[in-house]
Image (cartoon, rainbow, N blue to C red; front, side, top):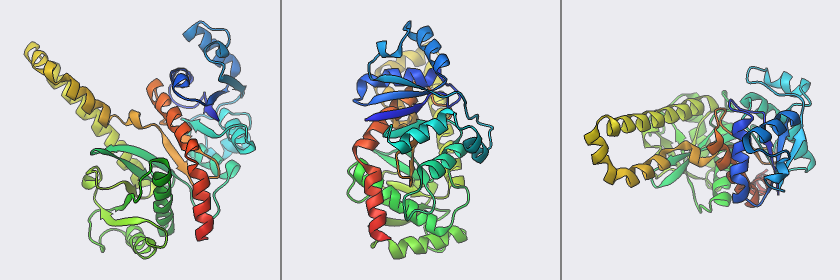
Length: 340
């Protein structure tokens, strides 16, 4: 297996990308190709690890030179069309031609969506691919679909998001019947805007045929109860939801830390609780869950957070390997061909 990593994508590139890959390499079986400006990558390898060749770190590492970089402010379609030697476009072309099994990037989300759709191609029967982000939930995990790629959706898109999510969780995490909820302002069937009300009816009518365990509308406060496995929504609402949750997690962690360390007495009192506090901190840390999988395209594509650090790249790389091993994309193609 070969994992393709955009070494120039993200706020902390290339250092975080390189460090994450180096940390992950001994925890995975796959080869890793760092895609980007070869001279820059080699210089950082020498600065960070004192090595003249990345293969001195691991023989399973290699570098693919790409002379351009798609910046966060670039217009997605123009960037994909005109920056043909960018790390992102080179990565997509390698994935399409079979030179890699999965592509990871923390770069421009719009360009990633455009490139995956135009260069790799959509699975037949899927109107719009979408980002599936994984979040912590009570004694479980929550899949948020879509978490940022489609700001304007039709009811059929939400139905397909639910179907893709179910297939993904069944094949990657072994869930027999993942519970799928539609994010809404109330649990009643009549609640919501036109999009959610029409999507509700589509899900209700097609759930059995498409093997979706649809449990109805779900309010945001119930999303993390552990009773819901998938939250389906449009990309605009999903992205607001995602970033609000991440912000709340940081607030809780910061507030808890300050409360436990504001005096000598509080520090002493906190000592017996440190194992439980560390366990809690790890549970609510979104970095433990890797990036968002771009479901609906013909080859595996993973979107890492734009602000990804070394730790998040490490987990995303491990997640990507698991995604390929479970052949989730192949099984998704089979399922949509069957129902087309």
